[in-house]
Image (cartoon, one colour):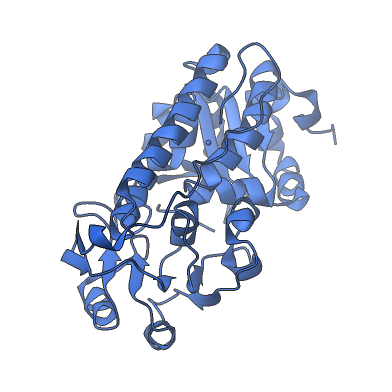
Amino acid sequence: MLLSAATLMGACAAPSAPADPPPPGPAPAAAAFPVTVDHAFGSTTVPAPPQRIVTAGYTEQDIVLALGATPVGVTEWYGDQPHATWPWAQDELGGATPEVLENIDGPQFERIAALEPDLIVAVNAGLDQADYETLSAIAPTVAQPAGELAVFAPWDELTLQVGRAMGREQQARELVDGIKADFDAAAAAHPEFAGVPAIFLQAPFYEGRAIAYQDGLSTAFLTDLGFVVPAELAAFAPEDGSAQAYIPMEQLGVLNAGEVLVWATEDDQARAQMEAEPIYRGLTPVREGNLVFTDGVLAGAIYFATPLSLPYVLEHLVPLLENAVAGDPSTVPAQP
């Protein structure tokens, strides 16, 4: 799984429980509508409070749920989760059973139309002009913000965009501000993170290469906590502007530029595969235990980067980062 494309911590004490997201609040009043939302393809007017929302992109179900509504249709990205809803969002879903759609070669237009939506949320759907026009013929459709990526634009901008369409912009803004404040609080509670070079990588190795993320949206969960992403990764980035850096195994030593390596492992097999490589075992952060290995859910939460997944990231990742900065012997490979 490739991308191109949050919770108060007690200072000097054990981590506190993550802050709950703000309550959904009352449904937007009909008097607040119609609302008009500007986006990459112009503007869309939503005439009345939406009752049947379909999310056509990879992660928008989290945003709609965080803002207190339940979609009638959601889109599966990956992970084979119940109703395409990961554990961090299951409480908000409750007992609802939205229809699960796909977006492989584009939205499933006929299935979306059959759900009779009154709002289509497609801010992270990779829409082009033709897709947008087809969806707009079904129902009011809100696309990615103008000037942003068609997939995995900044999570805060996407949250505000959806909030506008739902008549809940103020709630969306409060949600965004709260999560950012939680990251700031976690960074302040952990001054040992400040300025530490950290590298976020997919796992395991792929076609004889390590895939790391350059400084940017994909590493904001680290830099917002005070870490820095080594500039040395840029030498391994393709010319297409991709967020990834592709590092051949024979040049894996560049990872020594990171004092902490965060591996998005989804199972123990991925870790075992990497540890079978002598060049990996010889890396300084590996020998000194400055490593984080995620499980599949934490990896998914990092990749999703939504107002529901980011609090999960803070709750579950920060303790692992504490251990990694200090040196965690349990992450050091056993000698062959």
